[in-house]
Length: 392
Image (cartoon, rainbow, N blue to C red; front, side):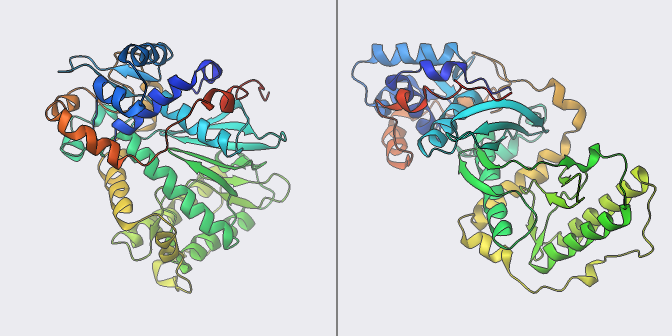
């Protein structure tokens, strides 16, 4: 889906409270009962909540699910986008949203700016956007767990990427500077460079090739394997031809069971690309897995920084069982529908039937487990400037 900030300036404080209530209720419900939304939002009178829900549904921030056994709504990716932007606005990380500069299978990239006009990059993770076609085949992965939604996986992907980018930047690896992270979004510095896949000629292919192979070994020496080291995730400065590495949700430790396989795949991707694009083949067949000499423990530091082993396993299971079953050609067909659709990233029909029983018993638990603070009356003032300035 495309990020549309037009409606953000028109949301009232009550609208923000209700939208946040739907998000909080989603921790325990695929489809959040309207009664629970009223309870969590803390607004007086159900009629006011219903009006807010109607306002949010009209702009696609929440959606009613077809054939649900009870009256309820679910958060859409659009609603999650708005909540993330709200957080960035309060932290003064983002003031305005500009043009889309990139789109991946499961992420969107935008140029944004802060109050000083400094340009940055906003990366929005959208896991499941093109994977919903495979949900039925992989239903066992998402069944019987409230947290196993695409939005939850997108949050984990953003959290992991931010943690890895932060630790890599602090250790002088050529990566963008991570500036902020909220929900499924990351704000980072804008790199004035081109993706390697867009470069047709190089003054010295051997020099860049050597630098990339050196980076693969350097990652491994610090206990890390990129896992997707290819022409799509390597930026190259036009003047210096220095590489910058991006996209880290699939990064793993050298102690991972498949670390050798991922390492060799990264090496092969670079070899194959340089041979095909630049007609360059190195004299040396390496580097090899046996060349790796661990001298650091950045993989351990990342886990200590807030991305736990449990979260890593959950995200890895998604990457292993769902993501590989998709292909690039599906990307154009995966769109997020509006109200009442099923293809909106969370997958999809049938899950909500499991949530219908015992909703009253879970109401208190939903409130107790929710950790995000609710938006106050100043929500509109905090965001009404967002979107006023377009970066062309």
